[in-house]
Amino acid sequence: MAFTEKAVVFLVMMMAAFQISHAAVHKVGDSSAWTIIGNIDYRKWAATKNFQVGDTIIFEYNAKFHNVMRVTHAMYKSCNASSPLTTMTTGNDSIKITNHGHHFFICGVPGHCQAGQKVDINVMKVSAAAAPTPTSAMASPVPPAANVPAPSPNNASPFIVVKGAFAFSALAMALLHFLLFLPLHY
Ligand SMILES: *[C@@H]1O[C@H](CO)[C@@H](O)[C@H](O)[C@H]1NC(C)=O
Ligand SMILES: *[C@@H]1O[C@H](CO)[C@@H](O)[C@H](O)[C@H]1NC(C)=O
Ligand SMILES: [Cu+2]
Image 1: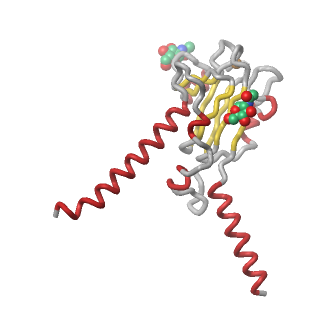
Image 2: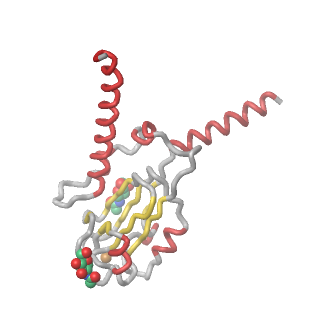
Image 3: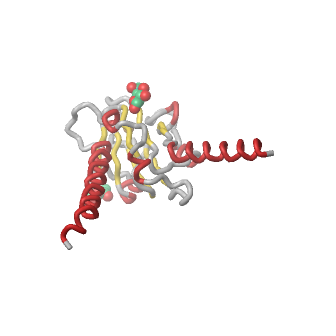
């Protein structure tokens, strides 16, 4: 009986560890990818996914014909590509999700968003038990450098992710410094 109980506890711990370290990669449109061919229903595609903070979203497309713009909800609804938050143009763009809530993307090529090339990535708030700590999130197996596209003039999201990680560690260092040196001043 002890063996069975130990085995169950071990299994549960393994599952918990997997949950915490598990960061999924979602390719938008799956094998159809990011396109206007075939009238892909990206709303339906998104509805089948369980997006979590830490996951990576990949847009794969022919960069001659499409792009990816992160936009506001209003711009998403009206397919207004005049002032995107970020624009990505490599044809293989990956975005690491760093916060929950809606993330809206459209193709900025005239007519494409209207034809349905738009997606709303709704990232759920994780439950407290499954929530990764900031430390484990930072130690995720995806090296930031792998996400940085070849030098390009645009302001792609992966850079924001990298900057965010640096900002976080800088904050942690500042806090540590504060805690270590505060007693010396009193
Ligand atoms: C698109 O958005 C811009 C900036 O928010 C705005 O000035 C413009 O009027 C909008 N165009 C349409 C067609 O809604
Ligand atoms: C796109 O990048 C991913 C890694 O981020 C890679 O696995 C995949 O093969 C690439 N796809 C293409 C078509 O280059
Ligand atoms: Cu397009």
